[in-house]
Image (cartoon, rainbow, N blue to C red):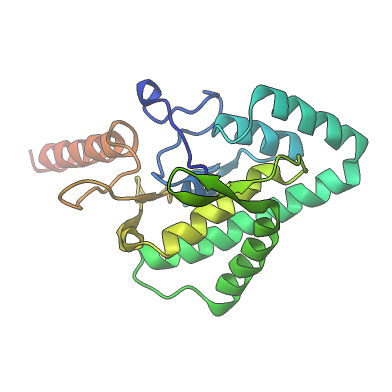
Amino acid sequence: MPQQKLNKQSLGQGQDPTFPRLLGERLCLDFVNSIEGRAGPQPHDFLENYEALVHWGMHASLLSKEEERALLQLAQQQPEQAEATWAMALRVRDTLYSIFVALARGEHPTPAALRALQQAYLKVMSHAELTPSSAGFTWTWKSTLTLDRMLWPVVQSAVDLLASTVVARVRECPGCGDCGWLFVDISKAGKRQWCSMEGCGSRAKMRRLYQRQHRQNARG
C-alpha cells in the first residue's frame, strides 16, 4: 500500500501549518494525534467537521489539491453522507486511540476495539486491488474517489503497525500531564519520551528547572 510521505525539510510539519505536526512516525498515530492536548483540561479537536477531515487528508499527503477540491464539492452535493462519513472517521479515531494507548501503557486492547478495527479494515480493503509490480504484485488503491477516501490508508496503517515488531515501541507522550500524543519510538536506544523534544520535552525541562529553583528559593 502507499505509505505516508513526509517532507524531510518540514520536520513533520505536514502540508498545512495550521494542523498539528505529524510526529507519530506512523500514519494511524498521526490521525489519532489530530486532537491536541488530549490528556489536558482543554483538548482541541482539529477534525471539527467533514471539511476539516478532508483538509487533514491533504495535510498528511493522502490527498492531492485536486482530490481535496473534488471531495469538498462531492460533500456539498451529498451533505448527509459527508456528515455520516465524518462521524464514522471520529469513531475510527477513537478505536485507534483505544487500541494503541492500551499498548503504550502495557495493557491489552479490548476485544470490542479490535473487532471495530477489523470491520473497518474489511470495509476499506474493498477499495484495494492487486496490481503487477517489479516484485510481482502489490496492493494498490482503486482510483474511485469516495467521501471516506482519506481513511483507507489510515486503517491500513493501523493494521500494518499491529502486525509489525515495532508495535512494542508505541509510546504515549506525557507532556506536562497534558499531551497524550502517541508515537512509535524509532530511536536507536529506544528511550524517546516526548512527541517532540523541542515541544513537550522543552516544556517539561523548563518546568523541572522552575520547580528546582522554586525549592531552592524556598529554602533560602
